[in-house]
Amino acid sequence: MRVLTTAVLGLGLLAGAAQAKAPLRDVSEIDDNMLRVALALEISEKCGEIDARTMKGMKYLWSLKRRANALGYSDDEINAYRKSPDEKARIRAEGEAYVKSKGLNPKKAADLCKLGHAEIASGSVIGSLLKAK
Image (cartoon, rainbow, N blue to C red):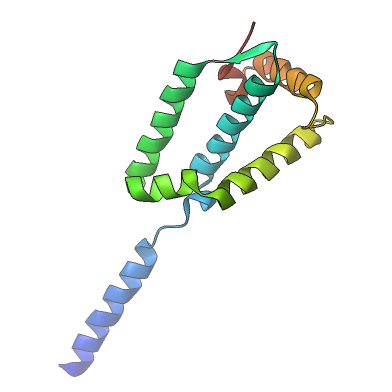
């Protein structure tokens, strides 16, 4: 009986470990899209030629939240992720790397405008969250 109890407890622990959630930063369908939202926001704030599609952006963020909830993340876990200074800094660094990968300077408004116009023209997720004035 003791062996059976130990085996059942062991299986229970294995099942719990298998169900452990990865940090949201490691869930690409959430994290990659948060990067896209952050890039669109940065472009709209720094480029006077481009505005954010605010309502579309809010709907998009709500859809990401619903998806994270569906994946088993609580509102507290989602809020901790989105408010974390470390996560914000990491996403900023990834955004700057993305801009640089396009041969542009993330510190120059003109380069962010170029990127914004290119994203709009390509119909990317970032571009769909932006509109030229």
